[in-house]
Length: 166
Image (cartoon, rainbow, N blue to C red; front, side, top):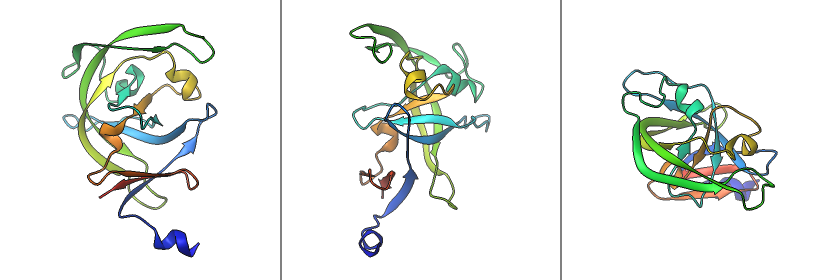
């Protein structure tokens, strides 16, 4: 109501929705600035505990990238984590690649997409992603490198909205 309108922060709002896994997610798009090619919608899981963002290979295939493509670089870094929900302590380890792509997030109804600019994204197929994103092909983990605006961010869980503050 009135209190909510008075407290509207300065920044861009990104609507969130809850996956069946219980995780909050946003619709995202990747864009290759060199070719202008934009991906289909990618399921972006909000992870405020992650410093870096990571997408799977199916997400970057939407802009025509794959292992060995121009601009897709293998890194000496590996990532470890749980394989699937309910798998106990079973873990996996995958090598990370990196690619520079533009990221956009869904905006408020009637508003343009929130353009976040070009950034280095890690790429790997984490086995947990299909389970956490209701089986969506193109998926990514949205970390603080993507989500944190110049003045920070504000998560409004009740309104299912993430504010990227100016």
